[in-house]
Image (cartoon, rainbow, N blue to C red; front, side, top):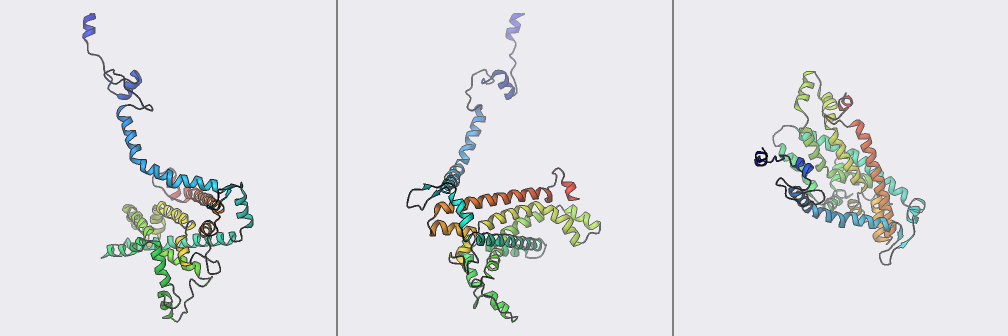
Length: 342
């Protein structure tokens, strides 16, 4: 009896997790396997290879993003002009920004003007263009390419083109208005028209948003549109009750990115106004003030404090948008989405 028992094959666990739970760090053959961070064998190798593959991004993030951010946070509490060692002054930079900066109100008003009006017009124009480009007509690929081409130009090149387009004497826009007897304004020389000129430049590069909206429109379920047509819904009701709700996550995504970009807008303003924020400081924005204080006035600590204030404002605006989006954006399959859709 004992000999039969000794010659019987030993039961081997079939599941690796079960094996670990019963034999600890031993493999199926009973050999002890070394563990690293609680992982053994292939699991450890997979984790190691994954970390190695993303290590260039991690190093780049630490060196070029997180490191400078932490350095600027430290400099924001110092008096620092690059030429001398930073001197700790506590929250004095933040106090000076809110209590003594003569251009604070101008920068805030201009930034909000460009962000609210520019994002609203850009979203509306992108959506209309995407709907037009979603039609099945001959040569639609050519139209889609033409509308996307401006986004391939660097912003400096686009700004130079608009210097010519907005020229009060030889510009295309003023010459076009002159055909109807309308005198064109001095776009970049008039405080009343300088900000609209910047918005027009922003509308020039809506191609990226158009492509994203176009992809969203093509994902609208066809059976919903057909059901609405069978129920007698016209074009407007299909748009309001089917297309826009199904497209709302895409609209929300584009709006969030556009608002963040609007707060950080700097290059086009700097190029079109020679870095002065003119005329009559009508194009002074928060981003331009950060550059001026850092690299013109040599107040690196003060500019760092302005940067962190802008970071907090953008963060709060983004959180507020996500809070609002949870009530107005329709996510198919999400809990409560059917109720919101009704």
